[in-house]
Length: 263
Ligand SMILES: O=P(O)(O)OC[C@H]1O[C@H](O[C@H]2O[C@H](CO)[C@@H](O)[C@H](O)[C@H]2O)[C@H](O)[C@@H](O)[C@@H]1O
Image (cartoon, rainbow, N blue to C red; front, top):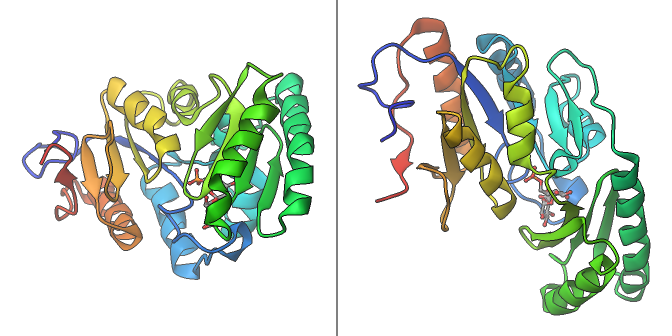
């Protein structure tokens, strides 16, 4: 097991904690709006923010406004739309690249006819990226793939990233790994050891970034991953956050909820 989280690692390191949202902090739901955010979770995150002296951020494919709506009344540091949007721990917002916004809008517009013809599909246009959901029509995955590829033809600085029953278009280079690195150069993250917890293919850049910066990636669930550690489910993530918070306060390392991905 990694030294960062090992019960034998000695003094507890000062951590910067990053997590994905859908499938990691909350269970997946049938539609993007149907996720259930309990008051226990917002209370837990409020504690985490204090336990880690505000060195906590959500790295998500969602827009920042979405995360604010779900986690209200909390306002956490967030990288949204896979890294196209970023709100720092001090609440300031990084300026959006206008070209990225305009391209995402153009790609969403190109996909509209497909979604109008297939109401079971959900188009989620975001400022900086686009999601095309086929959870309610899995048989349309291939059609969605072709439509996304076609929509991307004129936009080589955007790339297609598959998620869970979704295909997303995002700007090349604006990913969760770049967002994690940007946070790690700023207060209160700088000088801490990053951990990132995520469940999806779009989380792999951030696993690698955390590990390259001396920290650890923690993959929720099965599947190939660059993350060094694995965790079972959303409930275990909540327990881990509680344990890490206790560790930060007391110096004691939490009960092991993690397994090495090599085993
Ligand atoms: O990076 P994340 O925080 O994991 O966000 C990834 C995408 O999550 C959302 O879609 C996923 O969750 C939905 C609700 O559970 C589910 O219905 C959908 O099938 C999943 O793909 C969100 O809607 C996207 O914008 C995010 O990019």
